[in-house]
Image (cartoon, rainbow, N blue to C red; front, top):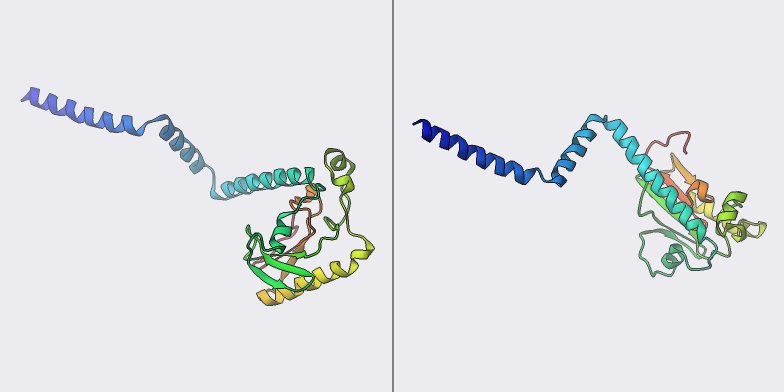
Length: 202
């Protein structure tokens, strides 16, 4: 009887050990450890860390974009205007195109771009530091001759806000240069709304 009990215990131990040996691979141990460590961090802090990671990616993309800002090659916006890349168009006229951002930062997030870039890559020049490490020193900026298209872009922001039902509260953002995380050197406006905006925005 004692022998049977011993055999039964050994068999149960062997089955259990085999099951745990399959589970405790280096990958699963590491995954469980990471999940355990995450569980110790409050949810609010985890969200903050996630935002920090996203911000770092955005900053890296902006710095990479600045290096080739004045290469003269078509931007993603040129391809959207030419309908080579599909987009969800919200508004269009002979001068501008408004379409939904593929990575929205608010329930409503629409980009407005001039159809003819006409050298309008950004509003103003960037610092000497960025000029030294990129091609931005020659990058065309807003000039007096761009006044008509600049005012039309702002007026279009109002039209988009009206169409999207956010006239009661919306924000218009223009990123200018790497420090503002500009990632496409074709001047564009972000129209954001549909939620309570915070201040300060940056």
